[in-house]
Image: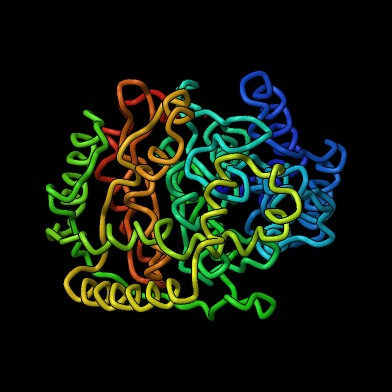
Amino acid sequence: MRAAEIAAAVNAGKASATHFVEVSLNRIAAYDAVQPQAWIHRPNPETVRAQAAEVDARIAAGETLPLAGVPFAVKDNIDVAGMPTTAACPAFTYAAERSATVVDRLKAAGAVCMGKTNLDQFATGLVGTRSPFGICTSVLNEEHISGGSSSGSAVAVAAGLVPFALGTDTAGSGRVPAALNGLVGLKPTKGRWSTQGLVPACRSLDCISLFANDLADIALIEPVLAAFDAEDPYSRQTKDRALGRRIGVPRPDQLNWCGDEESPALFDAALKAIEGAGMEPVESDIGFLQDTAAMLYQGPWVAERTAALSDLLRDDPSALHPVVRAIVEQGLNVTAVDTFRAQYRLQTQIRRAAQMWDGIDALVLPTAPTSYRIADLLDDPITLNSNLGLYTNFVNLLDMSAIAVPAGFRKDRTGFGITLIGPAWADAALLKLAGDYLAAAEPALSSFPDRERA
């Protein structure tokens, strides 16, 4: 299921939105035998069919809709009118009276919401194991994590249940699950897409994110979402920045693979494809980026998560997942002095990032250094989770844009990916660079049968 193909067929009158919604409903029902925990809430099928019928009526009336009849899923920390929002915490649940701005924009474009997906509770984690609604697994190897926090959204797309899904990304939640499940994951520039209707994790850093199977769908959907929203105090006027073809490549001594024996070769192959696509590799010092990444959870930004959950933490702490509670409780010890000192340090890192962009146009990094078995992750939930964010945690702190793309599979079939990272507003330009990379890498990627699993 590809969004571009569905929309083209429905707009041309070759198929109906109702048809594609029925396909999605059937696939979802069948996959319930594998991972029902990918979903937290699904509306009655008749409600979904009614949405599709409305789209068909609009097409019959002469409208052309960019996402006509395209089924999609929404991470359950994003409001959809008429559905509960849980953020994977039953005690927090409320009935959403209106949809998030991004959901409204998708529906106006003709897309049909199939339901709300599972996540690491309150979007705190990169693993997909921190939810009372169940642990999501990789679609490629059920012993391995799906990645998180947008776990259910990634599973829904990778399993072929819907062509695209909304996630969120504060520390890497829209990129790590993409890598582990062989997807494309776009984390836009902060403020490019509205976060009105999103349950905050770190409100000053949060982004809505997007999962799809290919870049064509990302390119179709992104303009629907990119718009200034006066209701969102963090929204910014959208603009685009062009990029050249100088691609920063990390020094080998700065790469930490966390013991993974296959990831280095997969990354080397991706770098060869980058060069084969006509881009110029430029060795770059990423030490300051790694230092910035550590600031997200070792610095005062953890207190921003605490602020978002302060009432629940005070009134009903047992409602929180034990690992999530242990993380957000750390914020109670953060002082204003700590916060200002970290802000000063971050400003220095922001200046260094600006200087970095003087020498390169974009940066390529592994999306995640490795994949973990669920059993191992549960034994060491903090350290292994931190490892997954080594190459993602700094991006929002430094106001960067990023797109994660597949870069092969390990022998155990778990996905490996790379991320192209650019300065703010380089979103569209990164899509072009990612397309050039994938065109050069495709002969190697297509040798893996799981790439066409959906």
